[in-house]
Amino acid sequence: MTTSMFSRIPDIDAAQSTAGPIPFVRLVRVEWAKATDTRSARWLLALVALSTIAMMLVPVVAPTTFEQTDASYLRVAALGLTILLPVVAILLLTGEWSQRSIMITFTQEPRRIRVVNAKLAVSMVLGAGAAVFGGAVAAAGIGLAAASGRTLGANLTVGAIAGYVLFVILNVFGGVALGALLQNSAAAVAASFALPAAFALLGAASPLVSDWIDMSSTWNWVLENDWAGHVPQIAFSVAFWVAIPLAAGVVRTIRRDIG
Image (tube, rainbow, N blue to C red):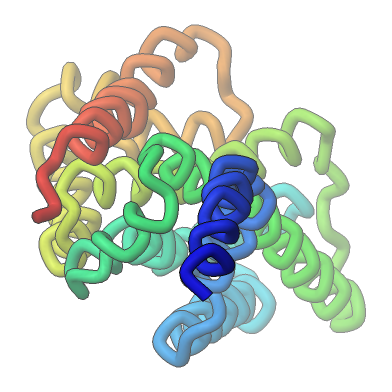
């Protein structure tokens, strides 16, 4: 009996040593479920959809309030999407820290950078999917306007579509960056609304802030496909809102004690 028990130990050790890392695709699936497959996430995504549809009704019902062109309808969809979509991205990055379940995640996958990369991949898919949904809502709005007898300006170009998609993804990653940096859901959500509003107020008094930091100006150039003379300002604003806080957040995630 003793010989039989000890003879199996090498087999167990061999099995453990041959176990490979968790496939990255599986990590992405798990993070996607965290972002979309909970009751709160589904409600939040539903609100994102409803806010986009509600925003689209404004130029349809009140045509004098917005420029009646295809590109302007697409921009309205982008504005509707980005009211709450960054909050979804924030919760993806902060949920486990706020709920104190991050130890489970990093026990299953000790290489934290792989978890962060999976969250970034999900955020990209989320932004791209939202952009497709917003495009469908814009198309429906254009169809309703045409059905009412209005003639919309056909100014929808490849550049305008690319600017729209980039604007949506930038807003998603702005939320990702805040979530990664602050690692607290309430603080990051509050900051996502308070900081842009504060810099918009400062921008009203300072052209420097307005042209280089205030995302309501710099990112709006992206949405309007207005790159001429604005590339340095847009690049600086993206670095300020996305690249720098995201890099700092990744470093903090890798080094933070979870004990």
